[in-house]
Image 1 (cartoon, rainbow, N blue to C red):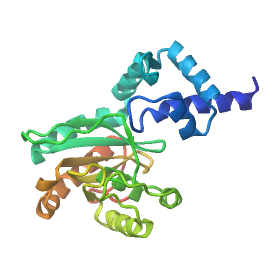
Image 2 (cartoon, one colour; image 1 turned 90 degrees about the horizontal axis):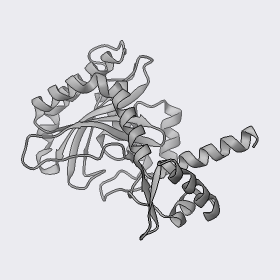
Image 3 (tube, rainbow, N blue to C red; image 1 turned 90 degrees about the vertical axis):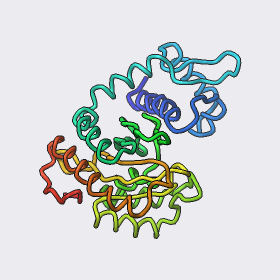
Image 4 (tube, rainbow, N blue to C red; image 1 turned 180 degrees about the vertical axis):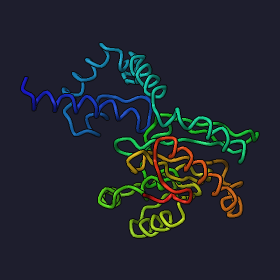
Amino acid sequence: MTTQSGTETAGRVIDVLLLFTDGTDELGVSRIARELGLSKAVVHRILQTLVARGMVTLDQHTRLYQLGPTAAALGARALRDLDLRAVAANTLRRLQEETRETVTLTALVPGGRAYVDQIVSTHEVKMTVELGRRFPLHAGSSGKAVLAFLPEGRREEILAAGLPALTGSTPTDAARLRAELDSVRDSGYASSAGERQADAGSVAAPVFGLDGDVRGAVSVCGPRSRFTPEFVRDCAPHVLDAAHDISHALGWPGAKEGSRSP
């Protein structure tokens, strides 16, 4: 096997695994082949290899595949060792106590962003998020908080690639979203109402690493009915403080008011 063909094969295997983080828990050969533009024969060979190593499992009745125990172990180890999650723990608890709503931590990942931690609201009616699942950056306050502070070239690539609607409120117009992202950079935080999940509201601010690159976002989220303009206004300073403290714990030297990009 040549280096080039080996790299191509490895890339296809990774692409197959990443599909399981994007949506439904179970996938079939035909859908994977269609999504990735591969032949069914190639997809079947990849899946057989993954099954043999416990990365995916096959339901013999439905003939659908899902992530297996080896993938779960790798994911658990990655979450445990992720610096962002470790340094944010105390700050997330403080933010949840201040707001009483669910608090989440998002990490920038290839192709989007993923929730890596949450502390659930003390309210009887509350919102929870799915850890580890990949979401696009244009939908929801956490995604927009990250997108706004990406390098301009990368941000424009994402805007130009298309903005699929996850709900009826998802931003799908690139020009309007571009203007909103300008406002996010000015204020340091993003808000959303039903953009990723129809009945949810949220407020988020970006988290930066040692080199000044955006690493993810911290957010407060809950039922849309509670996220009034007044609540968003009152909540934003707490979210900005939390994002600042997590960024500093990661080594970012920015100023206190600098939820803005360095």
